Length: 319
Image (cartoon, rainbow, N blue to C red):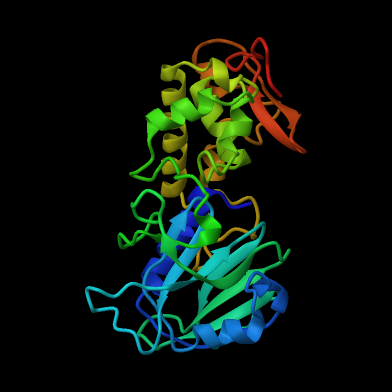
């Protein structure tokens, strides 16, 4: 499933290729991909046609594009958008910008025809092989803390209700390390379970949790209520570091299901230190002249990767 770096790469692509353009028409190829739009596919189309895309915003793994209606004047300083096109990529969702003459993708679900801009593709397509993701036109509400809704080109303090409970991510300027520490300490769980809880901190999935914990030299079952301030700071810094490096590499692609809006794959998988390296020597331990081995262990119906030496099993582990 795409995590924060992958979704942020897509957001930046939307900001470059889609923001500012008008949606001339909308075609729902598969209604299952707009099932989260409560009023159905026809209303979904009606709310999008002639709407202008004002921004591309991300919080955690959620993306949304605030919209202006045909009668609205976004240039008015008092104007506030009321709706947005919300996208969740799920396991295999893709938002692709394509020329109108480009053959349809096998798993095309929704096609948006965009206003013509010279040198830019004419369509935004939602493609989803496994149909866990989807699109919906949703209202916007004020953020709880008065800050921007998420990473964006503007500073709109608005967010879809479906996303309002999602915590700020470690790359968000309003992410609070002190609050992160106290919220971790108040829980009685393992550190990886806490990192995967999107209400606590958003955007972290299985891959980047393993990478950050390897970076911080912590076992995934370390009890959160035993963490000292310097350890939570180390975890937060490790998460920020691994996500920044992943962003620079265009995200992590293991197959064709995750791509940028132009179809390009990310290559951060070449730089992973823990995830997927089962049976290989730990790079850090090797540099330190020690024998550490990356192992794969079952975790929450998934897997966790760690080093046997520099991420030892803690006392009172919480699995």
